[in-house]
Length: 455
Image (cartoon, rainbow, N blue to C red; front, side, top):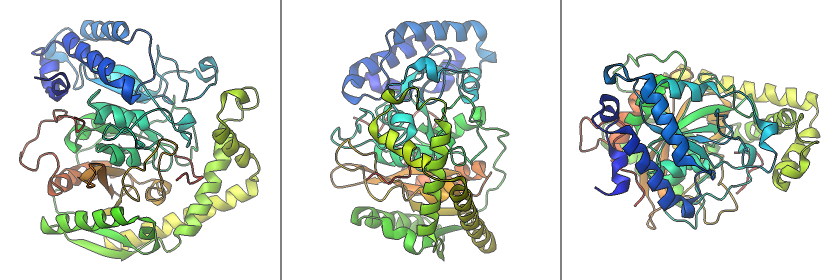
């Protein structure tokens, strides 16, 4: 078995002691050492191997009896470098002294550790989760962006370095890189995951999420970190809808053709997909959310920016300085506009009984070049609405770049989104299409224009 194929090992084998966790984690380190010098998904660490050995030993001492081990025992996880982890510096992709950015470990990381996971390392982020890219490359073609701002997390899972990684999303920072890298991105309902221990960007929109290889793996991870996870409890076919109107005008030709094909596949599989007039006010919503985003970015950096200005990239600094020019009156008016748009969206989908909305994960495939993380316009309305979203791999371009389908659920219906998302994944020809019961966390890895909104 090739080294990268070991990442297809069943996590149950780790938990039961049938697979040595120290050997498994050593293989993780070997894979990172072999691949990451070209990929740059992980933040450099002086003694990753030694630290992971200590984490594995601590986990084994904490749960010596395989019968008592938690569901993610020994599973290595990448953590976006705006999320604090005890024992690791947080730099947020910036030149700011990490002692300035230090603080208690994020609750979501503690929950993963309590579920038995070990932290493989910090993953590269665009600076402060905004739109200044880090060095990460797309695993499918190193000349293309992996997306952002959760670039390292998406690339690390796509390249088979880790089976799970954490990301954050303020506009499109989980869904878009998941699509560009050909993995599953799962963004929570706003507020379903505790955001403490995460360097904030725009708290009105900031949300946590995960990257995995398939929906089944996301369903294994979610109950360990989501607040009040429940059984989906609903096995009827979902009511699907496509937003008909100016929202879809943002697609490029490749993205538009792919979205048509994705919809056709779902309808061929027996799903009913409706066209529904939505988001006629998308331009107004986009403008308002940009004001909210920039104002809050300036506020969240108020304690650091003036004293540590030299540690910020010019593009991030310009965004903060722009935010400082926005008055509180303008900000509060923009909040009202956003809330009115979201209320109209909710009322319309409730009226029609829509369970899931279908949309492209991005305007098209990953752009050429590393100067941008791509355009988040396809993600913006759903993030502003606080809804959970799932990006599912859904085909490739003629040059082998991945494409994704975005599936958006109702607020606080994350469980139903994953349940139905698994069936959509099968219909699109993904994991489980020829295997009625795919094992979680066992799929082989797929790897053999700035908007002013932030990422």
